[in-house]
Length: 158
Image (tube, rainbow, N blue to C red; front, side, top):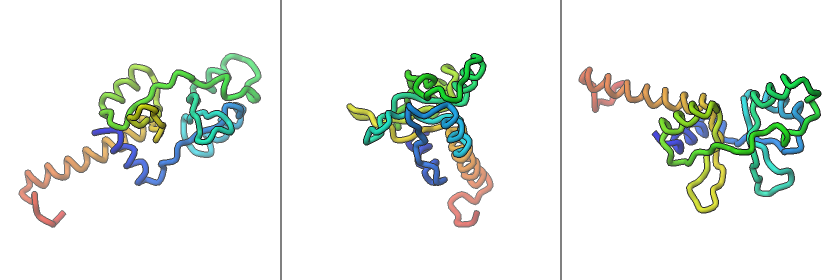
């Protein structure tokens, strides 16, 4: 299965918006937005850029690391905490390949880019999005194999 299928499944569920926040946002604002959207990470963009220019990723882990440092953190800008070296995937990448990279790099979210000379971020997937799409695909495969073995393959009765 390719990532473009996972992006399409996410869009079908009505959650195709790419969550992001400005580099100037405080950690308090980042945490509030993560809680509001019920997500674990989001992209960080330069304020005022149009179209949005994504420059990093910020996650719950980044916030926890900052909290554990013992410094006052609520007013710290997102730019000081975000991960700048983003691991990205292409829409044509195989899901198994991407999940292997995510596991090896210990990341749970990945931006998905187009395959052009000037890549554009077209989606932001969590490991939950990927696993959900895999379960859906396996459910369909099991259904078809069950129909085939049960002798109802090709019939209109399900």
